[in-house]
Length: 530
Image 1 (cartoon, one colour):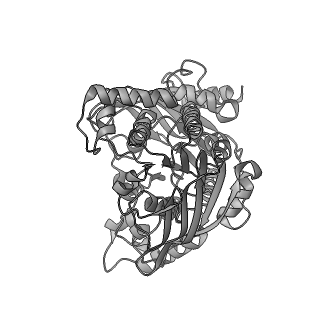
Image 2 (cartoon, rainbow, N blue to C red):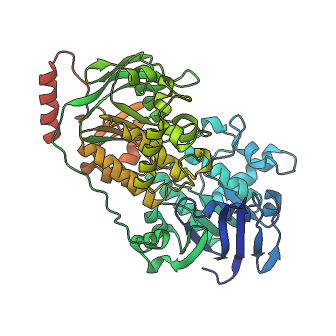
Image 3 (cartoon, rainbow, N blue to C red):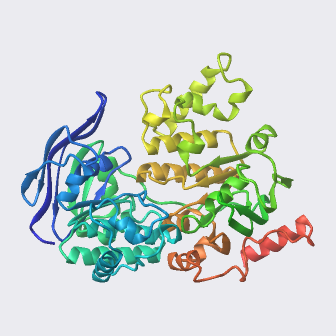
């Protein structure tokens, strides 16, 4: 690490309105040739702070120094001028453009393909990126799109890079490649800030770690001198048990059976191709796969929110095919769905916490005659149980942080006492304390006999929490493996299609039509125990 200071923040304060103090006199130093991790719970002010460095917000108080000189960053254009580039978690790319066209976009220079392609290849070669400048964005994997975003800021001469949750949707192999690239950039003198919730990655890649809590700066420690436990206590302000227990439950009958399921995407292509599996009561089945491999369509089809093109979906022997979500609820079928899009699909953003508790049954009496008193009591109980930060039960959920919104959604779905839970990325964007609360809730439901489909992105968590893991690649099952008998590396190979275990002994095989229900269950139990 170079002793030269690349970026310094002094007493940075940012308010939103009169009630929200996002950053309170935060001071921070970033050195050249350094990778600094920025940690904090949801709502701690990490992203707000970085948005001020990148010109999206303007501080109400405080000073910013670049190379020891005070600067004013009032727009992203100013940030580029001072060689600052931010790579956001949600990519800002034009799908129909090539990589080179996206990289040059907004750069105020004429697009000369040969010159741009040559410059892109030069940057890629220097840091170890793998990229085709002529490739369209819609043909790219998630890691390729991320590469385009990083090269875009490097092309503009960035010496200070900010990455927001850069590993959230990458395979272990892709994470290793990214870390190799970041280390080369550090060696080249770049100053890098990473916002992340994954403590194991923080310890692996960063030189120092800075922690924010409730908008205030808590401190900075050398990575070599700290532990996951220490960092967690700094973030939360108290001791937290970071252990996830895989609770063993006596094998029960399958609650949900999927047989030869085929589902189309929004554009008409096959998103799920002849997928078969089942989930027993008291079991958590993880679903691993690169983003866009069919997880979303699978969950929506099971929940009755997307039509299927073929196959069967059975809940305790009853077919759900063609049954809309409301009909599933009306028939008393005990199933809950926690979607990936928490505000777009799971909750009504303008409704209060109380009204969102009643959302699934509002057609049965929503309005002036509905019993809001009991709903408010349920909302209050949920707020207390899950430590949801909200001014009141009547606050619109759109005004809450992402972590608190997710707690409301998970809590509402669990409250109904389902025996099957479909959940997609339930802890995405949540801090470590909130995440472990969600894991505990899912384990509680498992103990009560619920069968859980858990679509996740953190393989370490899936290996610790799930009983079995099904891997999808381009809509096809690459295999179903016991979590206790596999590794992150093996799952990563399956996720990319490099390893296909679907023809091997399958611990989640669908029902053979030639077997009776009893024979089929006995057959599967014997295989699982072998």
